[in-house]
Image (cartoon, rainbow, N blue to C red):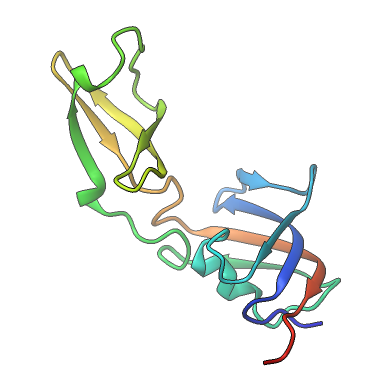
Amino acid sequence: MQIIGGSRVTLHFALRLADGMVAESSFDGEPVSFVMGDGTLDQGLELALYGLREGERQTLTLMPGQAFGVRDDEAIGILPKGRFPEDMALERGQIVAFTGAEGEEIPGAILEVDAENVRVDFNHPLAGREIEFEVQVLSVENPPPV
């Protein structure tokens, strides 16, 4: 079966940076299952899957902005140091989980800490980067025709 909107897909995938560093991979673990369009995968990654069939393996390069969006300077915020637990050691590069307006978890990377404030980058860590996307489709179940 071919992947279409609403397909239940099970696959292995790897995301690599342009220098070959693996950012994320399921090949050494459990495969990932999801329904196309449910928001599990970034929209750019989903677009790369349409038309693939069970058993196919594909590697393609997604240019900056095709997956995970472009970097947005407005996604960098300055928060008062008092907003963090007093016993939390705040360090550059540390990833901290924040709670969004609707209760969702939003990761932020600490860029800078001074006596009063913490500068945090809320961009996706892969935003604006060239990504190699390797996928092996294990199974495809298409929704019933309407």
